[in-house]
Image (cartoon, rainbow, N blue to C red; front, side, top):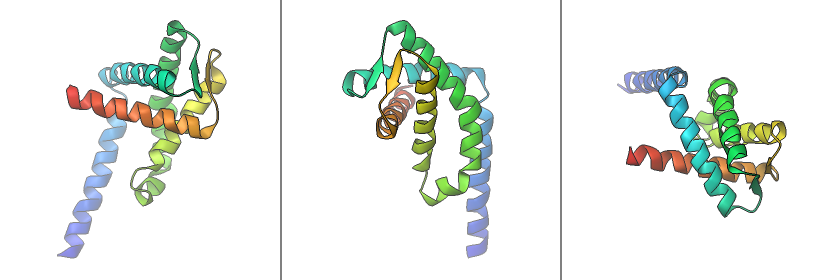
Length: 137
């Protein structure tokens, strides 16, 4: 009995992760992710002194870059780090998101995040914005 329960659990985890990877490539999801990144970015820039966005136009570009990084590199990193995410009950996803935010900060002028912990805070704000967005819509 326990073996079948464990087998079902593993099936659900693999199936969910596969569907998560597929949903990352849908156009509607990309637009939603862009909007959520934009909202989370501006909320964090207002609340956190260690996150700086130069202007609204720069924020649009940064949100687009973060969304592109999440869809491409983020999906690959999340797939590679799946065992670590299981061990940390999914919290390692925030670390992956923080690394992508730091990469976006390195690539973009007019957007700065002061250190890993600020990037982690921004990743959490974006995740909370995503949860709120999913809850409302």
